Length: 119
Image 1 (cartoon, rainbow, N blue to C red):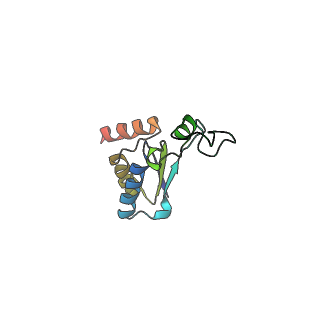
Image 2 (tube, rainbow, N blue to C red; image 1 turned 60 degrees about the vertical axis):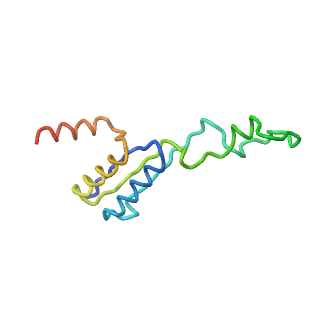
């Protein structure tokens, strides 16, 4: 039975580093997914039919504000690992946590902490 592990990251680079370590630990590439959460809070280049006048030279408000976002600046990245068993899930969770992954389910994290204190 697969054990899904989900962690969120602030930077794509950290998620990619965690993924590389997960693959090196023997987890299949198909079992590790990175989903970048991009919302519509801000426009990106190409969303407008109007903008800077071709007669204007230099950096302007439109070209600066609506420039493409660098990949490392993307935030709210989620990594999902489908581990084949509990032991692999535990190793995957440790790797994700070591790279700065955050468990998005506080109740799950609390249950794990309570279980660890009982042992």
